[in-house]
Amino acid sequence: MAAIDRPLKSPERSLVGFRPIKALGHFRKLVADKEDTEQVFHIIEALKGRKTARQAATFVQSPEGRALIEADYDIPAHLDNHSLWADCEQESVAQTYIRFMKREGLSAAGLVEESYKWLAKDQRPQDLYEWYFERLRDTHDLFHVLTGYGRDPLGELCLLGFSYAQNHNHGVQFIAFAGSHQLRRETGTKAPIAAAVAEGKRLGAAAAKIAHEDIEPLMRETLADARRRLNIGAPNQYLECLQILQSEGWTGDGDRPDFEAQAA
Figure 1 (cartoon, rainbow, N blue to C red):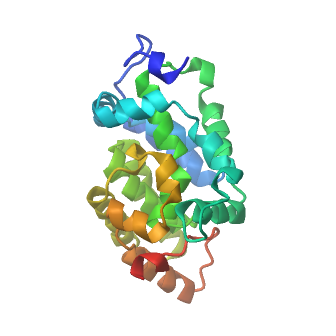
Figure 2: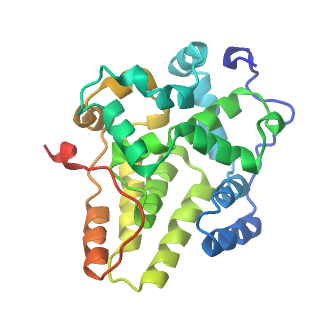
């Protein structure tokens, strides 16, 4: 169903979601196997609550939201079609994103496939709430590039703090802060991990909502200009924590986008 033809809310959709015991069970599975990213979707669904839904309804009924719905283009397909951005300069969001995704061996379509392991596409209500929730999912790796948070465990947790402030899903907040406690326990570090995650939350609250952006022109901006326009501050606590962790001999998996363009 084309996005413009969808109802705001399908009769099949329930907007109630706050089951902390269920979320805790899935978090334990995620701790046991950090590659089992399906558990993330279970946790987010179990603690979703109503605030994200209210934000979704407000946005899809706004002029900006309606314009994006009417454009009706596939974000993952656009992001993965690197030839679309061949004319963009090296300092652009697009080229920085492409380098990041190639370095990490990722694709936007891959995240979509991972989410469908949790709940198949044909089992999802095809309404405008779903269009919005898909947009939050599909822009995840773009968040990495724009914020400067890497895919190392700490970077992912800080990005979840940032994302919670943007999207208000308590499942995201739960993973961020429970995960920071788990990382501190596993590493025994003296780095202020909780402060770095809290900083991510503050930066996310101060920034414009990335998922509400028109992706096409955003990708063509320079990374420095996009960060300034969106008011995305430098993740100083995260960078400080990485230095401390590395001095302690920790080598977290994953690379991170360079944030030097913000300081320039």
